[in-house]
Image (cartoon, rainbow, N blue to C red; front, side):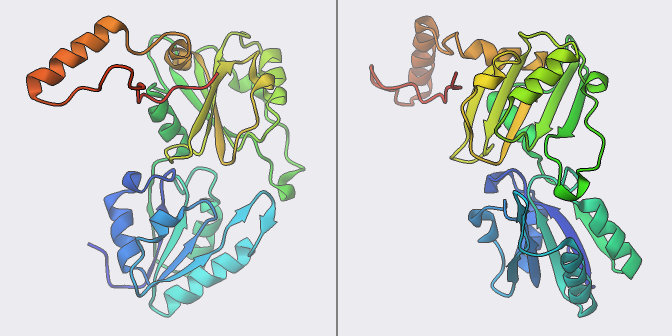
Length: 283
């Protein structure tokens, strides 16, 4: 149940597919008075807002700011004090590179009640779309989530210590990798990772516009430019995705098995020559 008291809900919108939105997030969108959303939240999710809601884009993307973080904080606090139910809608999970900590600090300092509603983050959605696990007790016991983007105000920050992060038993999930992947390849090779370590770039995970490029660490510099937002996955846990780029997912024998199964359950089988609907991972 959604409480009647004024409150700010910091909600994860998931990676883009409305079907991956949590039930709680959906309910909050239907009842909110004010929705402050990021640029990356797609229109199909925003369309779930109730007719009473004011929907405001407060996104910051690629260094371009429509509104400052301080102004966002003030809007949330002012609306809550007017006894409005506020949804601060963030793409993915609000706690993964979503400036959640700054907004929590502001709300807490102002004495405004708040609640964090988690969402499916893009890294998990990307792995699911590739049908791989980010962990595998046989070869990948660690996940490291890291941002490949440095906000302008953080240019003074120390460089990422890839030697401390890169291990053979680790899956690296790199958000906002940008378009020049050669730097990641160079840094991780220098850190000791094998040139044959699988790497996959996933663009617009979970949406109809999703694209994937499967390669190796050594092959990263040759990957074609992808649309933002994108995510870069690196590690041995991705070997299954790499194998699918060269091995057909359905052999003739397996196709015959599926055809027999379809006949048993009374479902129509695809005619010969019909293109396999399985989405293929681009080289």
